[in-house]
Image (cartoon, rainbow, N blue to C red; front, top):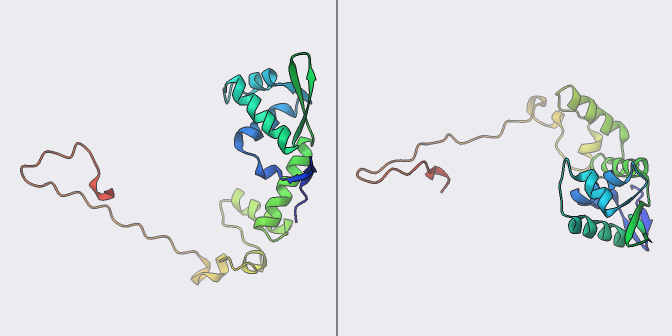
Length: 172
């Protein structure tokens, strides 16, 4: 099982962070320490948010034990309780455990197949097959059947009725 960081008396996994929380962490890691304003400025080009929004996110991260803070004058200065490297290692371990049955080889095979544009499956199908998931070799001919998509039928216009103003009534 992936090791989670135990901080503040509770266990938190890096994959449990919301997207904006992770963005704040990515802004915090390069600087080591930062104020709310500094993190807000770092996020501004890609994800502009109000000062109070960033302040709330950092406060939640402090409550979760992911960051620690100290008062410096009127501002809080935040520091991560784990490095970016530790967070990446923990996240990858969680993915390997959760999706690949603890097999880093199965993850590597999946990534290699994805890079080549192929569906990657372990040679023996063990990682997925052991958990009851379908593997490429378990489908007839080794290929997953394509899902059937119903043909789109034009909506009938009744005589004398006003045009439907571009509404697709097949979805109604």
